[in-house]
Length: 109
Length: 109
DNA sequence: CAAACATACAACCAAACGGTTGTAGGTTGT
DNA sequence: ACAACCTACAACCGTTTGGTTGTATGTTTG
Image (cartoon, rainbow over all chains, first blue to last red; front, side, top):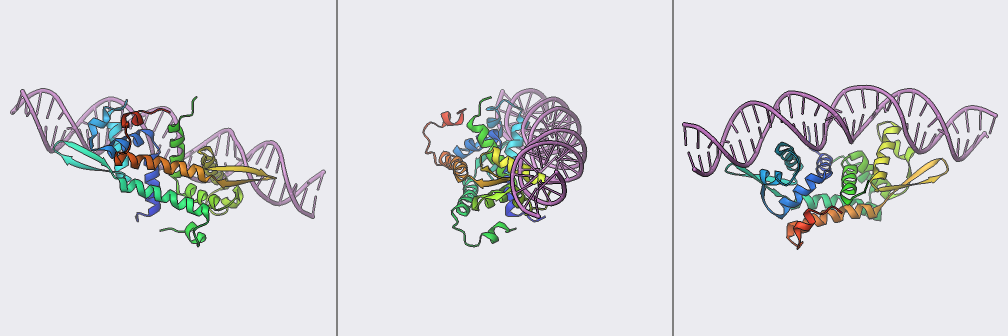
């Protein structure tokens, strides 16, 4: 299975489509947090929060590093920027700035 | 039921999390298209495409106007920009530019 | 060593999602 | 008038999602 850019876009926008995950992302962008630390902030089980972290991780929006028994998560600002640039591309389509719109519309890369 | 900004964010990111919807959005940002015109571009039923358009409309990413028997859809670039600004806020959290982070983290507006 | 702690993951469940077909209503053109 | 067309929406179906509980494994500390 080839991991296309559309697959990555799907995963990133999906990861961002849940408010708990957006909140987690804010926290780990502000600084490293362990999964249990994050979990205490939400009115749901540890396992649920851990799943949310996993979704963000699979989308590339955060990375985890092991420190003893804890998993420290931190946000990847570059990934956030890459989502921004997808939206900028949309804006450019609107502005008509892209010459070969047909090529863009049918791109499968 | 109060429509919070988090609700809108949920709807927008969810709408953007499907590649067919992102493609539809590109087309209607480039110019007005009827639903049937859009539908011919995809290998799925008219009803499926119509549902995708409805999701984008509910999220505020496109608007429809009636012209006789056809519904002409056009993309709302301001809505796209509002999604961009959500991501910019995330970037600013990372940069530590936001003074009262706690207020932002717990905002319910 | 044993107890407490932090994580990971499987199994399960109700609800939402993304697709289908079918039906119905408004608009256009002959 | 009527056939063709465009849209809207309901009903249905398999899969995914977001939550739960339970179990297993590794790490720290008394």
